[in-house]
Length: 174
Image 1 (cartoon, rainbow, N blue to C red):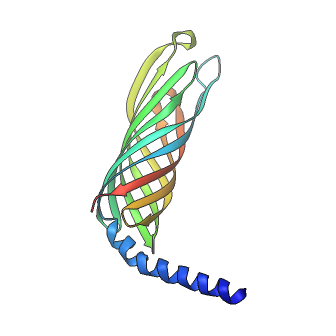
Image 2: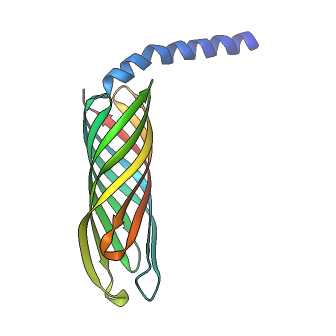
């Protein structure tokens, strides 16, 4: 039984070793993706303490010209509830460290956020640009990648932050 397990493990390791060089070479270029998000915003400026803690989605478009650099745009549906509806469009540079098929990266850019608040809670719509930053880890196998990421940006008009955790899938066009 141990011999059979060792043979299967060795075959699996050889298979991963065979695709790893292809995976590392395949992630440069244009890519698209989508993911699920968990976002939180806490608005302290209102009499009724409004919090948005919602699951939603993000869409990703990017270009990775070098192994260590990518430029990426994201549309993030931050979420909505009875009082608040929030979205953001971000543009960032990603500094990437590759370890085999694993990417560790840091993100720095700008977020154009928009928040609509129901009239019963002070009403109105605000939007502005604020800095965004984050960190993530991804794995890529050929054209397909998966990633987990934390990203945050300030919402200056409301003196609060948007904190988003996401799990996404990407596809690179070779």
